Length: 287
Image 1 (spheres, rainbow, N blue to C red):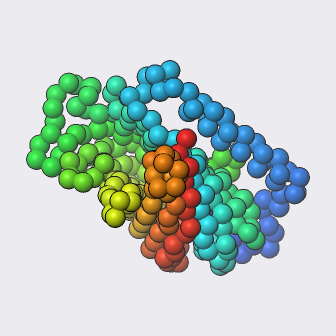
Image 2: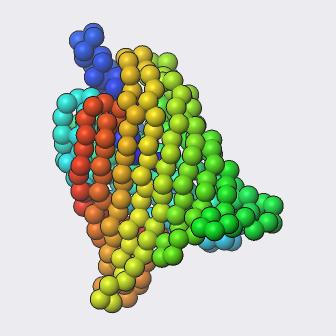
């Protein structure tokens, strides 16, 4: 569930300069602008789609959001750091037999190339499918999970089949542990060997002094693998949001407008030996 910010373009760019002295993806400004418009159009179509009533798609519940984040993010393959704006469309929904989660990012470094990246995860609840209560102790349910990670137009594609354990922990709106394969189906120039992922994701809402807050996000570990340029080191990634429900106090519309920060911590960012620990400004509008 990682936000990669066009890691593949950074890899190719870095090794092209290192080995051939030529820069790949030297896009013209006009072509770059066209690509931005195309992908923003895709995002807007997604927003329009998920604004329809839930019953039209058989959703038991659904939540769609637009995020804006800003922070100084490292670009390890380019040996650079840049102030970066990230616009994210995020959607989660539940239906008769399971639930869905997806996001799509447009990342705009202030002195670099625009990056696009998305992920989707569909979970089939074994308890819902079989009609059997699978709750045992702190375990609430078990699920069969299928994910895809995708960087459009640049050849990165990963498949993540696996299983989910849903936990029943007091105070948490949800808490899951996901165990998946990490199967590469990228273009040959950046193709990697297969690996695995372990991901813990959840949301913890709470109130303090008549104000509403939440801590939500995920922690992932992806195992070591190889690409044409050598070892891609195993990484550990924390992506945690601290939110304040500003709409509750300011607009008298709770669960609508949030401000806060997103904390990102990387050990071996993108498989390099670069570490990162950064807080980003966060603004969230729930549709």
